Length: 337
Image 1 (tube, rainbow, N blue to C red):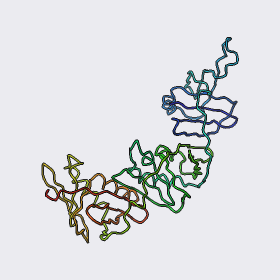
Image 2: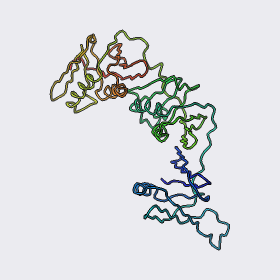
Image 3: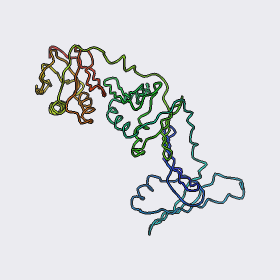
Image 4: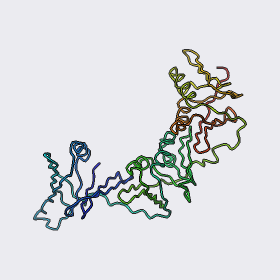
């Protein structure tokens, strides 16, 4: 919950950790060398919004007590001043902060962080919350693709600019910190136990989960007898309209039949027609929110249309533009309904 602050020559280095994820950043500074752990770090960050210009720090470590003259892990007092504002508070000894772990990299890649962040934003909806299969909670990196899966949906995209030698999984907490690089490229270092995004001034270190995850290529059917082009905005708008009448998402699927979306509930029946030149020849069901998530993956790319591929009423529905892919599992339909 707190931040380690270390002044060393011409740099001030800030380090945060929850013991699973580490983030370290260096900014220019002038003055002597010292280190301490802030107390109430979040409160200080809020206060800094009211400060502008240069901050001046003054730190005084406590004197060791007479009964322990060699004690080194001592707390102290910190003064922060800027303009007419001043903060004085207690801080904790730097020795109390956990050591930053090393990353013994077996593979190193150059990463365009802005591009990777956008790719992650498009697929993160499909991340699992499974507490047992840790790999399914993470983003899978494999060849030139990254993917996420939760058992009901699968999301994947590819970029030739980043192609990895062997699959690995990055926890979403590390991926969500990519904006701190502000669009600059960084190095991705991957070891057996940890991985790091490193630009020199900023470093993110994360533990890697153990175990295996889904084989994406095996999960995605290779052949589809039916393929259609759908207008993304039209499809999203119609689904959002029908979604307003759904009271029990787990029991009220959308039926897709002949270009018409149908919803049957205890309170009534509702339908909406899609603007399609060619309509599916078989009825298939799906959960509205899952299909909306898949469509939003392509809407984020500002695409007008996407290809929808189907096989049988019990096979996954695939949305793709050949770069991004979204898989939505079908909903078993009660034919008597």
